[in-house]
Amino acid sequence: MSDLEATLTTLNNSINNTITDYTPVFGGVEEKSQLLDGVEIQIMGRSYVLPDDKAMFERDIESFLWFSYRRNFRAIGGTTYTSDRGWGCMLRCIQMLYSHTLIRHNFSRDWRWTKCGVYNGILRDFLDDPNGLYSIQQIAKAGCSAGKDVGTWFGPNTAAQSIRILTEFHKELNLTVQVVMDNFLCIEDIKFFAKEDDITWTPLLLIIPLRLGLSECNNIYIDNIKHCFKIEQSVGAVGGRPNSAFYFIGYQNDKLLYLDPHVTQESLCPDEIDLDNIPDDTYHTKKVDLLAWDQLDPSIAVAFYCKTEHSFDNLCQQFQETITAGSGSLFEMVAKRPAYMTPPRRTPVDKLLENYSAEYDEVNTEDAASDSDGFEIISNS
Image 1 (tube, rainbow, N blue to C red):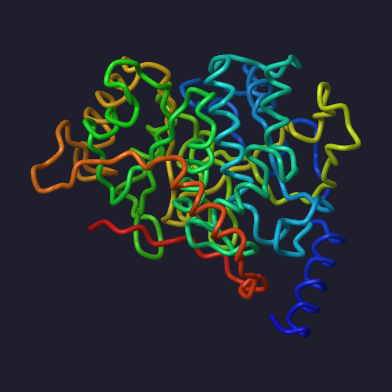
Image 2 (cartoon, rainbow, N blue to C red; image 1 turned 90 degrees about the vertical axis):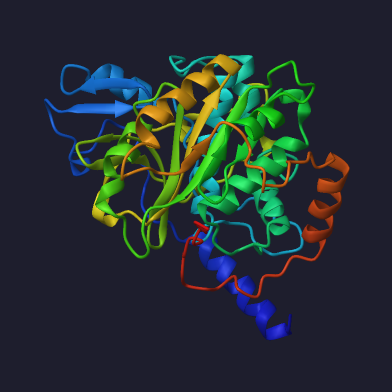
């Protein structure tokens, strides 16, 4: 990179560090969200009707960990980036999805925001710290292994693959992440990865990237996307609209309910806070928004958490009855691997680590100032 390019990159980061999108709101649900009274809201297997259920609804919303743009964190290795404003929205969304998965993994769907040691440990792993297991630095680093340079936008599939890579390094979590590719889910293959000794089930985060149209979403998929949020195993979805990524957690009518990462806040320096009692007010919010179906980018990834094999079998049964049935089928699902398909293989962690480190040491920031936030087109073939 030339001296001029280095200067421009530094200037771009300086701008990112000083400009915010808007001031965070930590109050109740704002009117602009346009949530309707008397109309059912579905959030990951839970149903609410406002205004009667307003307190329970807001308590559910604020119990999600909310990750947004931050500024003035330690530079991502090999670059001058000290803020993710303008490019890190999908990374923050996958942080929200994965942190909720870990909450479900350690507690339950009905856990509500309460400070405790386990919760504090989960939050600590997502702080903007190069040593944090799932920090912005680590996810950006993993993205390099998937071919994405630091400072460029991730699509849902790349974000999912980055989390899968990071999870492989931490077997102590007793969690496996599987990303379904090419709109084809083979139950036998998923169980192969979730039962490494062919006996014991490892709790599973299943992420399914989808393509719901070419330039816009086909209306034929609306009902099945909505049905995803009715399922108990749902942990939400990541996607968005052109130029913006959101963490989708539910719906009302034909609008998707989401948490928005496009708020720039000051990063917490791990060296300056009590890591056993992290100040967490800025990691929770009651603010939600709605996105109309016709504004949704057709690239989206839906996700489900299955703590037991029985839960996974139940999920597949629900898929068969609804989501993979009829003309609005979201993907194909089979019980057994077709004879023409190559059997799956487990990639040794040391091989993953080799690619992970090598890619990150040679990060490229040439596309950092790009002004588009396109999501990948996911092959259906």
